[in-house]
Image (cartoon, rainbow, N blue to C red; front, side, top):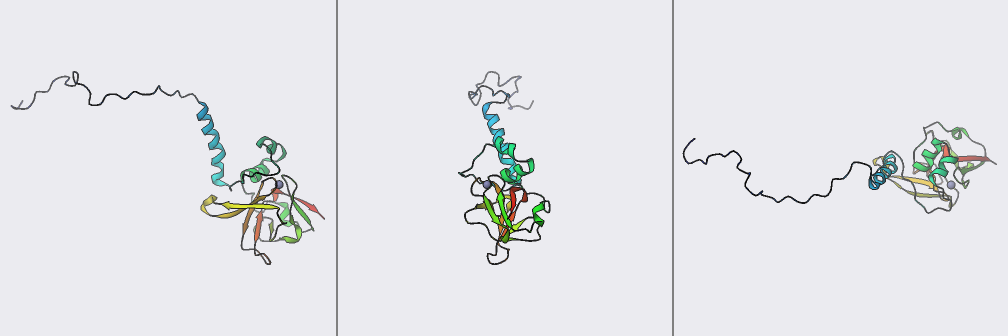
Length: 188
Ligand SMILES: [Zn+2]
């Protein structure tokens, strides 16, 4: 031991006051699910699927149903598209080949949406229209997939229909790119 250096002691802090007084801690949170945990999980379940889907219009709408009521009247695919903003598989809709005169209605509330006269073959694999019946749809900006698109939905019940792009034929220059499962065709 060199001279002048303090001699270490066995338990030098034992008799000292701590540098920091301990901060009173709240009671330990139990790991059982609390109401807040359940609520957070519920919100996550609601929000996360939308990361991969379109935004959903919130209304208010003339026709409203609970999620259970929508599920009861729609197939799982219809529900996923119309109420969660998913997109049906390209080429999957029988309405792609539909060319008869008539009117396309909303599957959610039967509102008349698109006239067959405005339907055209866009080659995309989704039923496409260059025009819509007046007041039949609402639109909003959809920023899912890191791009901005114009979402369209039924103005009466809010069901998601598809998106609108500006590469359609004249006279409108618009392409309403729709999910066939959201539509019911009624021949004239
Ligand atoms: Zn509707």
